[in-house]
Length: 426
Image (cartoon, rainbow, N blue to C red; front, side, top):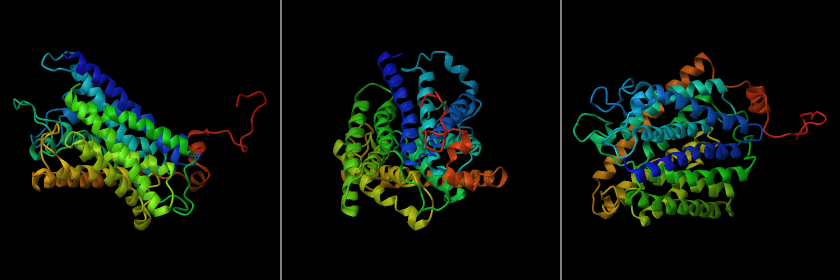
């Protein structure tokens, strides 16, 4: 065991875990004051359910030996209960149990991201059931495709995108962000629009909470990206640097676009630009130079700021912009590897701008298309089945009054409509 690598991955897993409350604050601040508790509980509840499933069969489905050798799904029974991970592997530089914990956080974060598509209008019980089914049928298989690498001796067969196709996705542009973003689109389409959308859609009730959530996500993302190097060395350092500068460029890019289009730069735009760039650099952080990272971050900030307008033109209710930020940002970052990748970076491959030709771009495009199509179709089927059986939407009256009281019998803030008992603490 390498104590340095182990310590770094322990810290990285904790940083990725920090992203769960980061998402909850980010999303919670963007919804109305009578929807915030439900939004935050969807993030925490979905993540907690996925953690349980991860122990039972999720880790096996994602990282077990491929059932058919085609790299489509790991054997869900291979590490059932994870008791095998209690035994130390002398051939590994980090504890396998720690790797399982690190990847668990990825599964939790991805599921929490999808919750943004259902803001304020989905039954909490239906969401929990959806989250479990989605993780089982969508996230675990796609994680196997992208993150499960075959062993050098051929004894373990991993996922087809990582091995047969050879696409580059350092930390989850396809498996996490495109996967969650296009799943959010499918769920939003099945759920339908909020009452009065878009004219009566609620504005963010707390922009400071949005900025707080974005800040927590920025910090957590260093564990997400640099931790994916699985060692405390040169690769992690390059990835850390690329993540930092891309995020800054994305924030400035979105603010610039807002200034040009709207005449002002907003805090919400700054936070969204930060996140969109972090999304885009996630798959590319080990493949590009710092200048390439700046370019990818800036492009993501500019393009994603325009992509969020698609919901009004196409008529889908994505009030928290999961599609415009995560699906579009993840796709941009994955494809731009084919242009900006340099063999001097840790991944050691070159894109078009560094003499590598168009082959890598084609590989990246195929991997992106596969994840987008699979995730959208399966998510739509899951949501449609639940809609026709148990129902997805809360009653109209509860939606108009705010879902917090209806779903959880509590409110986030004391207001004039709620009587205060004499002597009660505010």
